[in-house]
Amino acid sequence: MSTSRGTVPPCTTVIPDRRKYVAELRKGSRVTGTARERLAADLKKKYSQGRSIRALAQETGRSYGFVHRMLSESGVTLRGRGGATRGKVKA
Image (cartoon, rainbow, N blue to C red; front, side, top):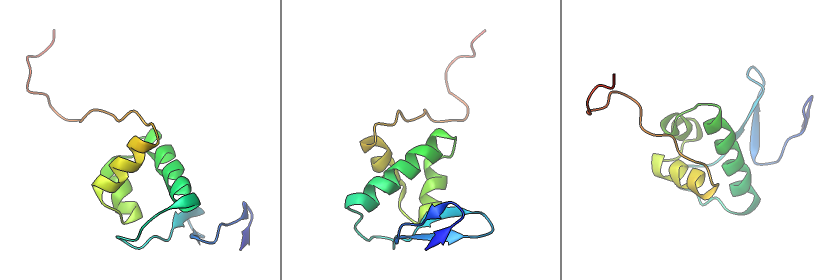
């Protein structure tokens, strides 16, 4: 398939209104080889843009643990947890 952005790999779907490529991965299916590398690169890019692991998991239809593992394997430095801390207030 060809688009204005070039040739689309066979394991992707083009969403015309958003112009995004979304990997067609069934939940629980094994991801190996180049598909795994592409998914890892995509997750790494989106995580570095500020998306949360939970948002990425929901978007890809994979589990939180799967996305966490893919990011860790890709060498991403994971952000700390957000929200209030339980320690003393710093002045």
